[in-house]
Image (cartoon, rainbow, N blue to C red):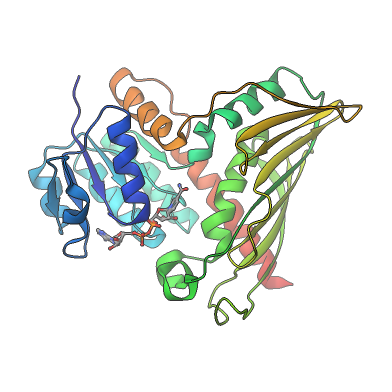
Length: 321
Ligand SMILES: NC(=O)c1ccc[n+]([C@@H]2O[C@H](COP(=O)([O-])OP(=O)(O)OC[C@H]3O[C@@H](n4cnc5c(N)ncnc54)[C@H](O)[C@@H]3O)[C@@H](O)[C@H]2O)c1
């Protein structure tokens, strides 16, 4: 069955969604961006119609699915608008900056009887999927600790919406730690304790921001797995990695090499044979399959809301200390 796909927000990740939808076999038919010319710039050879007005696109384009790829504080209103137009919605992360907005989005999806998913793309990265399976299979015994660092240099961050709380709803915690928090929940489920420290520094990369640019979050899962999350927009890239340490070994997804490495109790490291794959293509293909075949979503609105609840708690804890 062919489906009609639209994209709202034609910036960086809108471009990624466009490529992913095409790669998955669904060429989008409608692209919308509030800035005149931005949607046109993405049309290329797709034959898609470009819009600057969301309501007009929803009225005209006869869409089945929309990717929402705009800054975070716009996600709630745009998602509800699209659901009320009877579309299925894949909204980028974070789902929304507040739990109340997430709840309103979930309720709107229920009312419309349409699917709502959140762009937690790492759940579709083949090495992460394999890591989760290996945990389930007991490859490293009982999981004890989790560590994740996603950090790098965003030199122009002080000039972009990322550092404007009115558009971003927070700083690096809302932007980057949302992925890490979701990875922790993907592996270990809900959390019972959240602690955080955050900082905002003037560096040679730019002036101090209005939001935190670097953060550490610690999490405790309901059954006692401990997690450490590190994120920054201001540090040299270093290693991007997710490691889970268990009683009989560890598993590391190294995003620099895109390899999943197992270490046994003697410290012997083995790279597991996992074929790399594009997480965004897998994400949109999964969403389309759920819409068409009624399968269970890998990322639900509840997952989006639980991640936001953790981020809100982390930001509050970081501000209190
Ligand atoms: N999954 C990931 O790995 C990933 C990576 C980057 C960004 N993101 C998320 O994607 C979202 C967008 O980020 P980006 O980097 O693409 O930002 P961006 O600034 O590059 O693009 C956002 C676009 O949205 C448009 N826009 C804003 N409000 C609009 C509205 N109401 N209607 C129509 N268009 C509107 C802007 O004009 C802009 O072109 C954010 O939520 C961000 O956190 C996710």
